[in-house]
Length: 329
Image 1 (tube, rainbow, N blue to C red):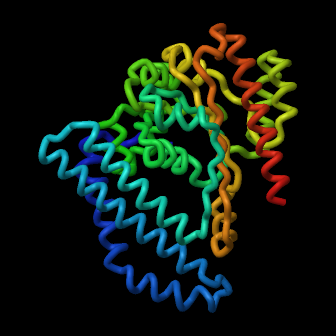
Image 2 (cartoon, rainbow, N blue to C red):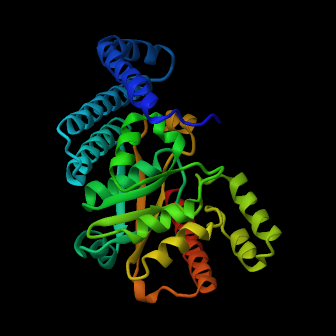
C-alpha cells in the first residue's frame, strides 16, 4: 500500500475533494432515495436499498458537518479538547442513531455495577480491552465510551485512516496516534497514550489486532506454536469465537498505567462482512454487549502472569460468545 500523502496535500487537495463528494451526494439525495425506493423492490431487495441509501446520506451529512465544524475551530484557533470531542460526539451519535434506526438494530448492554461505575462514575482513566469481530464494531466501542459513558477515547490507528479528513483532523488534534504497522512501533504509542491519561480518558485496545476470522484464528495458533508458546497455543485452540490475543499492546498499557482499572468489552450480533450486513438489513437485529470490570489491584504485575491473565479473560470472553450465540439460535 502506498504511503499517505503529506499534510499539505491532505489539507489542500484531499479534504476539499471529500467535501465536494459529500455535497454532491447530498445534492443528489432526492434522486438517490427515489431510485432506491422504486428499484429496490423491483430487484427483490425490498427496503434494503432505501435503508442503505438513508444511512449513506446521513453519514455524508454528518461527515460534512464535522469537517466544517473542524474548519471553524481552526479558523477561530480553538485547540481545546472539549470543542473537538464535542465535534466527535455529534458525528458518532448522529451516525449511530441513523444506523440503529434504519437497520432496525437493538443494542442490549449487560454490565455489572462495578463496570458501570468504572466507566461512568469513577472520574479516573480506564484501559478498555475489546473483542474485534464484525463490521462496525469499532464504531460501537467509541459510541459506548464517548456518548454513553462520557469518556474521552484515545486510539492507536492505522495511518491509512488519514485519507478521511475527519479522522485525520481529530486524530491529530486529540490524543490519538497514527502508526504504519509495517514499520511503526504500536506498543510504544500505546504506552504513551496510557501514560498521559487523566480524568475521563480511556485508551482503547483490540488485543486480537483485527476482526476475527477463522483464518486469523488459525494463524494466531500457528504463530504461538512457532514461538514455542505451547501453553498459550493450547488455550487458543480451545477458543472457537475469538483469536488469540496479542499481548504486546495490552502489556504496554498496563505497564504505563498500572493504577488504572481495566474494562473488558465483548459483543455478539455484528455482521461478519458487508455482504452479511446487506443480507441482514431488513430484519430486526440485536447486538449484545457485555462489560467486565477488572480492578487495577487484582491484575498481576509480572509480564508472564499478565499474559496468562489476558488469555484467561479471553477464554471467558469466548465462553460468553458461545453462550449468547447458543441462546440466539
